[in-house]
Image 1 (cartoon, rainbow, N blue to C red):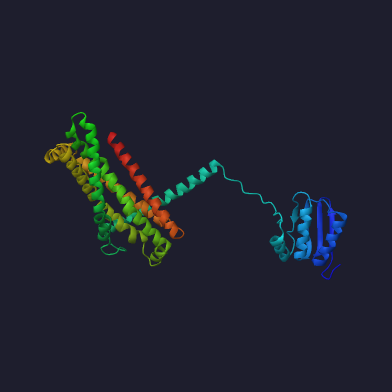
Image 2 (tube, rainbow, N blue to C red; image 1 turned 135 degrees about the vertical axis):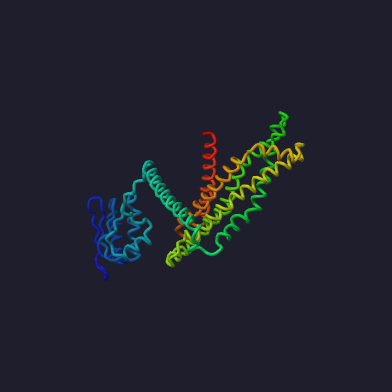
Length: 366
């Protein structure tokens, strides 16, 4: 008996039940009792009946647990909140939590099903976005409603004119590399003059449109995705919708029309500069006169080849805008998600351009 109440300790089976007020005086009484009679053997220490406890009581419980064999389970779920807090804060052996059945990890087929479901849903959103962009772009040719004045010209400048230095540099370097590598193989057969034919076919059919599209995807595709993602994060997209302005017509359509107009010109520019770089190699290292190089390059490709090249470049441009817009509109979160959306847009744009180029190449064989 102490001023704060009574404490009892009873052994029931393999459980030791302690009830009452376990404070300084009562804890000392129990300590002397167990020191004289020996500590009982138990596997569970039930302290749910403790109504009050102080640091002396916690020290006594710690001694009991250390004197026992093994690591007994401490049951304290029904204790007052203050008692729980004191036990969890000072008890060296924290009370064992009630075991909770851990959720079953999904199987391979469940994960595959989730991925397929999310992929189909994302493909559906992409298809809807593509349809809206095409529809409003066709309408936008005849109606400029909900579109800033001169926005198409501004985008032509940003996407087309500002890309010229990058396209020019890489096209000339690509032409020089192709000419040098081709000459190494053809020189062994005395067929250096056919370098011009190979250069023309390579630049017109593959390298010109594909490399230009990859450069535009890295430059303009990333800009489109980051711009839309930033607008989505900063709630500018919602603000436009509140004002009754369609974000697709206001932001995306000018870019779509601009890339449709400029990417064929960029591809033609790339083709001519690539062939020009090969011509420089021919004149300086292969003893091929410029007029001969131009004549053989012109005979290797026709108008149909050039039209096919420019046509597939338009498809490449459409893919870049649509994918950049899709990932930009799909952002949810903070600034970190903007960078991720931009990266994903560039990666998927480049992959799609390469796949489309392969499909166009297969159509030649059919």
